[in-house]
Length: 450
Ligand SMILES: C[S@@+](CC[C@H](N)C(=O)[O-])C[C@H]1O[C@@H](n2cnc3c(N)ncnc32)[C@H](O)[C@@H]1O
Image: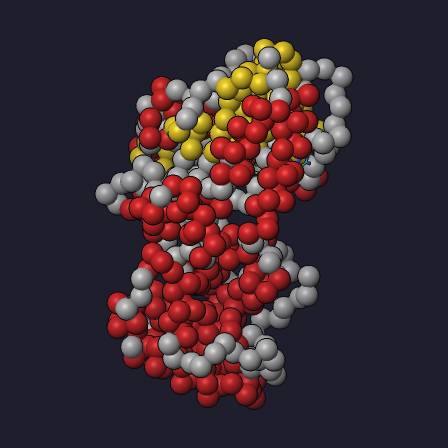
């Protein structure tokens, strides 16, 4: 991965201190470039000890994170708005210019930041870069015109149509119908709440943390500071997990003493649920770094599992399991609310490549299962090839019978079940306060091995 410098020095010409707010914009710009041009996940960039966010103070860090998040979540609208005020895209050899414009437009159009600050900091950023400096007048003119016309520009946009890339919107229309596809795209514009899976007493934890209990049993919070500072974190009373992601492990029906292989387990959200239910869990993942996070999570939660670093396509343990949970790698289009970069970085080809891998992993999972045992296959994808079609193909190919999901297992929400499969959508569980609504898009199918 090419290192990308921040696009502005901390000191201006003649040693003058950089204007306030410049460091946050520079970090957000560098991170946006690395995400869009190099395909690096923003969370990795934000957390990196040598990354552009590492030099920021806490307040600037929060601001940079918010600007970056807005620039990714609203990318379609931002690019559409900029195109109204400039001919063509920034030229190839203009360095960070495109990202500088995106970051400034995110603030002008969607954030409570004075327009003049967003414009002048963007112009300063452009001036500080060898390749972008020739385009300072262009940046200045485009952003000023955007700021002057921002209300009309936003009013003239079809927010829903611009919320998803055309190829994904087309797929969702085909899979779910036009109305639901539009609702999915709109749900992606809302920053999701924080969902917690609690070991016990969801009502008590919701009251203590100022959240609500969802019908499916997760606790949901809107306003929160650092997660580590929340009551119950250090004591291991709960773990962070989208409410939809909490459902597949429940379908195993784990009981004390039952042996369960949790395949593709890291960072361990589902391992924790299975272990908390008393199962003897073997957590398998190919990534040692992600398994370190799984071990740390289990240690904090005071839960136990055997942890195995292996590729499940070739892993051959000397016993069969009572149950297997396979949370397969996927396009993750069901997590766009939490990771808006997914909508920008995934390509149509990825769906077929991952579906082929998932089929091989299902074959491997079935080979680990005792006759009569339970298999739950799940993905956090909205694409039928990674969900419904994958499950139907497995039924045709392997010694499996479908065990339909019952509403009572998932908080009495029949709308989350289609044809016996669990199918959650970002537009599900709507709430009057939109920030409290929505679910990640998950698919899960449960089978019995014949
Ligand atoms: C969707 S994530 C799993 C999330 C996890 N189940 C949880 O609930 O926290 C997919 C995982 O699959 C792992 N993975 C991908 N291919 C694998 C393989 N062939 N064998 C084992 N693990 C694999 C990745 O390292 C990644 O951690």
